[in-house]
Length: 57
Image 1 (cartoon, rainbow, N blue to C red):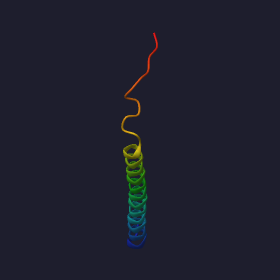
Image 2: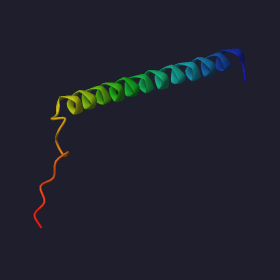
Image 3: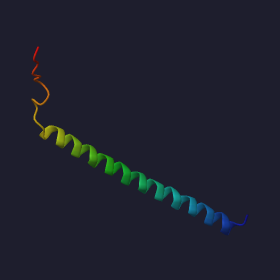
């Protein structure tokens, strides 16, 4: 393998790694936003919901 093809292969591998990292960061940010929205929704709900159960015997 000559130097030119080795260089091209190396740079393609670097580009692939950079793209993979960018996609992973996007997925992580999306998951963090979804989690934050879920926490907000849970905190906004009625804190007494489900604490009292009416039973008839």
